Length: 347
Ligand code: OGA
Ligand code: NI
Image (cartoon, rainbow, N blue to C red; front, side, top):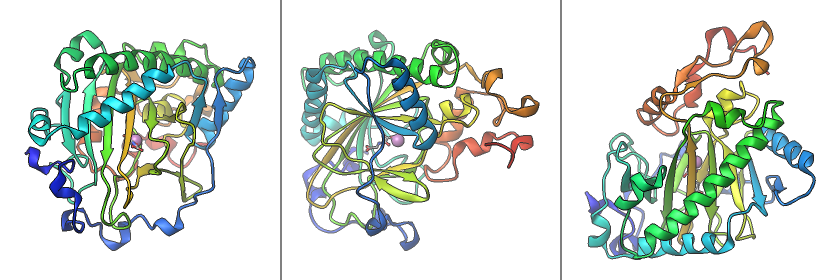
């Protein structure tokens, strides 16, 4: 029911409701988070193409995350995207209620937490999830309030898709493959968007905006409010805070499918969003996803000795169903697809 949404005034005050309080052992332990580390930044406008390829390859191996600047997505469309997202979450509750659903299979839905049908503890997040490709199939059903929503988000989606395809080319090259490799094997890629809204929270040390997870898709392109901290990633068994003071940068991360397609060379790393006592935070995650029916299988060139693949071949559809049937912070979903013969032996 739509009255579960956090983005209504009545939820903003008072203390943290019990349904959001994590058991002691699962709390974010914010004092242990490394705040002065940085993920690699890649300047996509650099004339040195081979350096770009090498920097991205290095980041994908060691961090699973990197930041891009001079990436070709217009500053104005980034600004308008954030603005329209903010306007959407400020709409009156009755207006937002039209889009509410807790059914993860719906192609447009406003919901809260992660998967309220399955989880036992809630996350301090509302989100609008949209399918975005092909645009003409989905955009007509998107919210028509704010009135600029469809136009702004459509423009943004097209630009982000172009950036994503370019990155998949650079990622392929970094693995010693043909530039077109990943784009070819991922098929007619779907594109999904999560517009995440994390309201101010009365007790950020007891809960999450989004608990630790890996992204089930191929590649994620995140636009975030550069004035508010929130994203943290797992690196060398520690949580590090990923901020940026550049409003025109994107955070890119490898999803589970690129980990599988690279035969484990590139990492789909754990990450989470924490919330703040004094500030709301918005982020816009764009997900490139393999076409449902394609078989996820690494190229021969990347197989290890004896021609072994780390993971079984599966279709993305099988993977996605499995992903949504679990709790978000259960073991890495790829572990469920591991080839018995490759256990312990890789990398
Ligand atoms: C996501 C995600 C992080 C953030 O939507 O998958 O990891 O900072 N979001 O909102
Ligand atoms: Ni994520």
